[in-house]
Length: 428
Image (cartoon, rainbow, N blue to C red; front, side):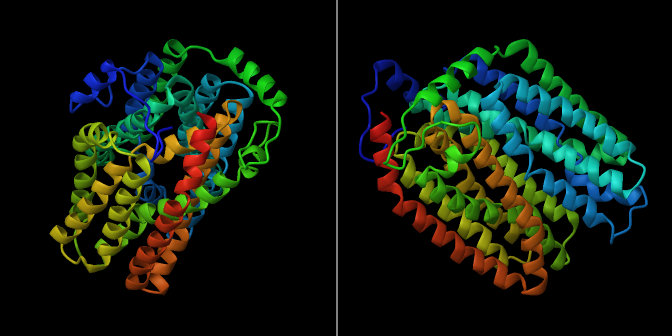
């Protein structure tokens, strides 16, 4: 992990790589590109979620019953990451990814064929739980494979893959939904199986390495400095890490603010009486900026210490989301989306890489599981609490309140900068 005060000397080859303005995503080992390709394919099939409300309506599910299925879908996000992180450390990154991907495909079929609301809710919970098992294992594989000095770029590459696939899914979703919802489920399940085949045939087995990591972690002495060791097999390793305990809630606040762009932003556009195409334009602006700018921005910004870059990007996200409260036309909404999208580009990969650098070798899956679980909680709260506040307290309270919350989280992360530097020096 590169600190704000100590920067390792770069070899001529690294300087040559950085001289290419689009070279941030070059020179990675095969495992990284396996995950990149699989992620793009899988995210192209990310279609059922955005159209789930419409599918439920087509099956005769009433408006007062729909929240049961949506709530179950959100609840799965609270289970999958924790299970995925534990399995990735305890057994195998590869097998965990395969279980999650094949489970996702099966859950898609179960949701489509479910005969009533109760079985739909169970299938929806299984769908989100199995889908979110994959991320911690994939993140841990990135951490295993890439040197600390390049983790920032590797995690940004993963985020870029998500946005490429999501952009393609946005184009496909409306067309396929118009020709039958079964096409959405079929493509989503098919891309999950395809990713599983890619992992099964192209990603090397890591079971032997996990056994060695567990043995090393069990033998590691405890430390009084707040740096966790990997003793035990549960999430106590994360909770004992004082720095992780402080960082994860701060990240959670920021992720909650960002997740409002998926829940409260559509409400705001609808409240202003704008057509659905306005939301489509907002999504296109976000995806277009991230896909076009992420490689260039990552290459350029990786020259700078990541904490100041992360803080600057976080300011843009908080400000852009808060300014949603001032937008009432389609161009104005597009402008606010552009602001927080630029922030998203700037922070790309940094949070995941920071969590990876904090983790003991034998606990990388659980640290990424805890981070992904934080993501799941943030999205769940944005769908429930965020929309409730918007409705009951009013849009202005939500948007400007998020500006204050974002500022507090940014200040907290900035205050932890020296502790992050000390951990880096201790682990270097």
